Image 1 (cartoon, rainbow, N blue to C red):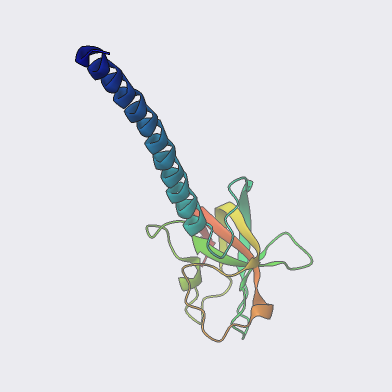
Image 2: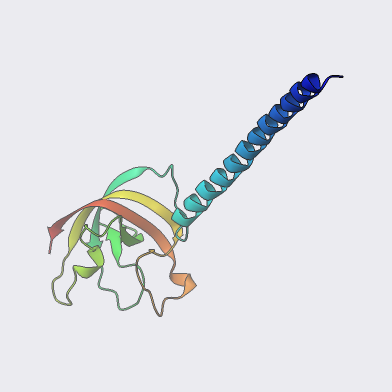
Length: 149
């Protein structure tokens, strides 16, 4: 075989190998990207568990000045009180837990958002002295209106 043909065969072989290497590298890069995306989703879903498909609701809640470090907000229309931990979706929203100053009852708010945990605690609160038995529904709100204060 002549040197020219050997050179052509060598060049084509190298090209095929490098194309295959590129495909393998792309697969590796795709796996890394999927892994990073999965990690990002997991960070979003730290306790309380974030449910992407959670239904958006509007609730009217009353503040209950209960002498415990438990959830303090309950639905106004409900005979059997169901308590909620509240969590603002961003820092620009009023923090509902800061509305009570020790004297100003009743407090009533209208909030729109999603239940992000059926049995958990709000992410942004630093809850010292709260036991696991005080876990409850966590409602992350994107809109808040103070009705009574």
